[in-house]
Length: 199
Image 1 (cartoon, helix red, strand yellow):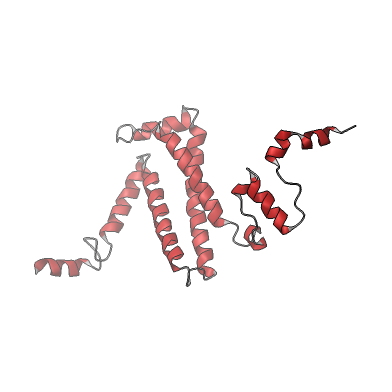
Image 2 (cartoon, rainbow, N blue to C red):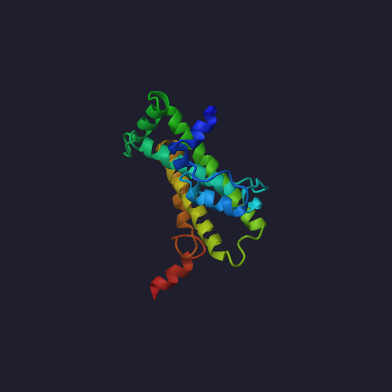
């Protein structure tokens, strides 16, 4: 008499999902991976060091995860926030105190802080390990651009509540931009810009 497991393994449903027996060698393992609907999405083999948790603490992966959290929570919060001078602060306090989405705002806020920290730690690790050297210079340039974009988005998110902190942040930020060499209207490049404008 056949057992229940034998009956299940001999059924058409089982054979359509698991088309090959248990892999016993590399060739059979490749065939199993490529012909299985669920397993074909993953690589057939991967280096052991590629999946080991190392001293990098997976900062790139953690940063990407936090980016996904920020995207999802930001889109959901977008439906409850009105970006006007009169209503911005009221909407933020309502999100925090009145609506049931208050936890969502806190997840978004703390996720943003954590993302800035993990981006810095990831860039620091890349710098210390020399991973910016050839042939990966372009990866470093992309990383620096993403770092600057993260800091810019963090700054603009800091301004959204339009409270006293935001007003002073925009004041300090605009003064820093004004003092940028060769681009701002004050600071080291201002004299050179004045000379060029007089000609």
